[in-house]
Image (cartoon, rainbow, N blue to C red; front, side, top):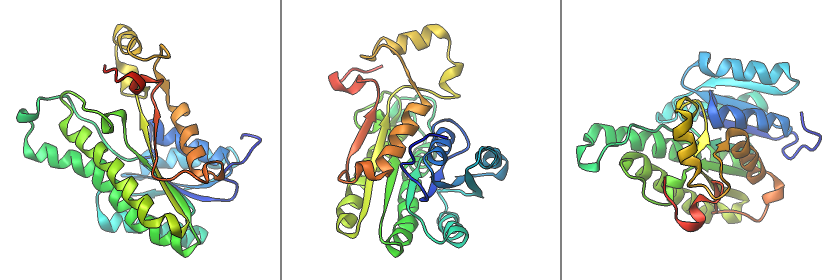
Amino acid sequence: MTDHKLLDGKVAIVAGASRGIGAASARAFAEAGAIVVVAARTESAIGPIADEINRCGGKALAVPTDVTDAESAARLVEETVKAFGRLDVAFNNAGAGHMPKPLADIPFEDFEAGLKSNLYGAFLGMKYEIPAMLAGGGGAIVNMSSTAGLQGAPGMGPYSAGKHGVVALTRVAALDYGKRNIRVNAIAPGPIVNEQMSRLPDERLKEIARFIPMGRTGQVDEVARAVVWLCSDEASFITGAVLSVDGGRLAGGAGI
């Protein structure tokens, strides 16, 4: 556990917490002093994360959730408030990528699935998180976008469209609820070494790193710390923003 507790005593939801950035963020929220409700589709995926946090002296609850299903998304917030009395912060991280494919070759069903996993989840998360936060006097939400949500990404039509949509929803929610003490921001990671990227050959990782001004790919913990900061009072005058965590890749418009 860290010495400073940016989220001491706060109740937090982390959706998409089973692995990668989501799991790292759940751990980081706990280290920052938050009670963490971890969510993903299955108990087997998130139970170990909650158990780990509890073993390390934190407090966590696992709630199996399909963020693309309205009833399931509502139940996640209901279970959180039932267990801990309120909801203070949320990280809507759930989403999915896909194999690159030229736009005209993408079946409609795949496009629709991409929007559901990357955009619907953010909408449904906020739809039920915001009323719970209003009942408690306010809160902070971070939505997961991507550098692909700020520029085009070849072959990634559904993913890029969904992540652009997340940015739009984030800004709209920030405008709708800024005067009611709810801050809503988005995070836009660049190339981050998660489970999927770690399986790439070393030469491919080096090739990706060459396009990054800092000369390396990012780590999931670096994104997690940025999310915690955006949810904390250290970011108290920041809302409607999109924070790129990309080693400077978008600063010059470079692609990979």
